[in-house]
Figure: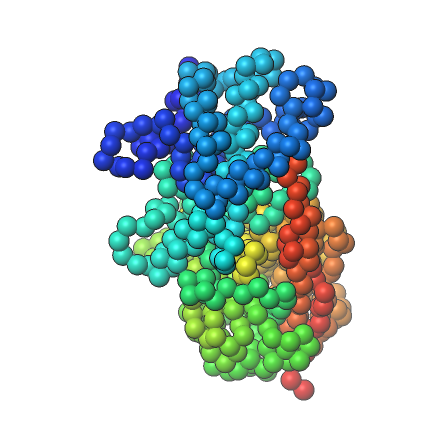
Length: 560
């Protein structure tokens, strides 16, 4: 029967000592708070300890071990002391009690609701988890004079990782875990930016860091861009985005069947970039870059400096995306973020292509970081969809057709776009499927989720609206879905306003984002609003700019 000691040894295989030359020992409490958070959090999770009545009941009303506001205050004080001054005697005493009194206790005791002794064990692991969470405050973002040693050490490690310096890395599992002694095949710990206001879940028990599954299930890199390595991280209260719903039009060859040699197998289709048409364009890349620059300038006439440009799913090949982003960033020094859907092979020997979300961060025209993320689930087309987009001449309406893409290498990137704000990008079906990414999204709680779609109009009543609403409630992210006008035009019976995007923020109504028939973009201005957060154990705080709210949405027309 597995014991608490066995679990600790599995989570910390090399012990908790700081000297690697000494034999492994687990007597001392893990010095690095994310390691302690991972171990204690896993115990809380295994026993569903966060659901106990004493987590919320008034002292004495539900028997033994009720948590009180005094406990929550102690978590904050002890966590702050550890964050600022190193070791804490109180934390060491809790760990010693865990090891000495409960080391031989079966792991099953974490789920026991009847035994008073086991209730003490459960309360110890909750205390350790909450204190470790408080000790990690500020980790993963920029630092200032008030930052503690944990946040400063993490900041330095991230800067080294970004610059790809050689030598020993202080945090060996970056960028997908901030742990040192807990290996990434056991668990991962990342910063978090949103605390859910609903639900009784483990993730509602922490407000600074999140416990994630092992990296083998899904890798979730934390990507501190926007100049963090050089101290360039901004605190602006506005984030202005330009949505470019390209391709604007596509002919009847946009989806093509993929030939298979085995009879009776599933039917597959692919996207043909050659079917895209640009109004008034010869298809020259330089001409497209100049047209995009003009569009950015017109958007800036509406809402001010554009910080990010967003294209939907399957917008362009990767070579064009890289060239276009460099060209535009060099001509618009205020641009920080360039996101687009693309399509490419992982390597020359790959049999399938990958449907990608490509992201690049810039500062004053200088590339800081670029990365891509595969789509995790294939699009399935049925006869109704084929008819809706008038593609029955290319795809048999009597069959079901699957998107011909590689769904390996499952990753969900979290990028820092402002101090205290993070961004996650999803591709179409990934917004609607629970596994493997949604548990990670719910745990980290990105400030903004952008879903790149190749879809019809983004109406609140359609499927993107349902899933955007769910994310706005838990974890409390603001959600933006965007699509091209190509399939909207192919499905529309008459010209008129085109709903190319949908916005949903916590506590607000969904907003359908329209452009006119002749418009080529949509300028969005997002403001940072304060948000009150309360953990399950009663720790409260007001996050000054914790919520992104849409304050302006203006269509952008082509040059007259």
